[in-house]
Length: 338
Figure 1: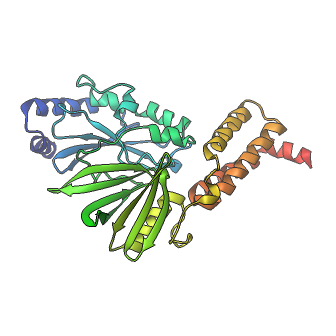
Figure 2 (figure 1 turned 30 degrees about the vertical axis):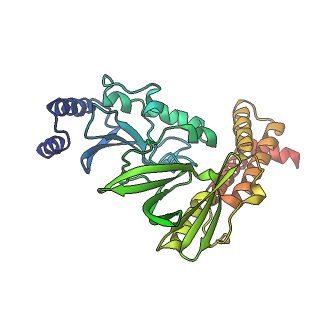
Figure 3 (figure 1 turned 120 degrees about the vertical axis):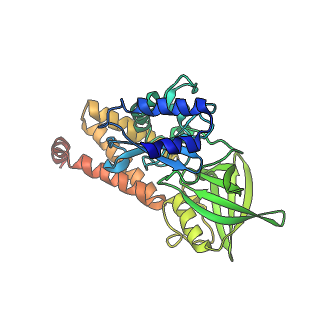
């Protein structure tokens, strides 16, 4: 307890802040310890409250789910941030976005205590589970705070960092790039503090080329194309990683010189995933040969698509199809068709 109090005093200098934090941490003790396991961690001059929860069906493959409440050393004069640390969905939510407003369904105010935020995590996970196959909805959740300090030591499961130099108008600028299958961030270190300079959805990356020790990334936004040149010492590792986050396959499986995914450029994958969700719900209400066939066909289309662009999602829909076929009531219908 003495060590914790020393951390609080070291982080929060103002007496008003210290009293508030002590009150907040006391309130956390009323939470159900079986539902929420709380751990405190000091990051530089900020406080991270890690909240570990039990697994949720259809999320995180049966592993515990971790959130963190990130308290800037100016808290409560600035809002806390909510980050997802665990792998839950694809595209990932564990990418540094702040979900405080999605959790609260309103803007934070100093009257809202931290334990109140934590108690809303289960409803947020229900929302995520409901939309787990809706990529656009998952990408719409949360926000980044561009041109502000960015914490690079949160312990996010689904990101990777690379030191690089960005070439702009013939001049090189030292940067750090964060990769994930949802967003690609460009960060700059100033006085040992990371600042978030730019955010780009990974889906907007349409081409990757390796030229010597450089990577040329081509981005598409609306009908406009933009090229970005990065130089890296570990270029091969970077190419493998960025292709993995973009397509689900490493550069060893895909020709590194040019990756465009032209074959699937016009494939409406979100429409197919919506179709899968629709037939799954229909099947829960009524099991008929027509609905069964439609769902099996949809699974097969998803398998064909993801087998080419994403190993991980390929396995997900294979598993769904296998589980469906393994059901006793489904086997009866299939045997009657023979």
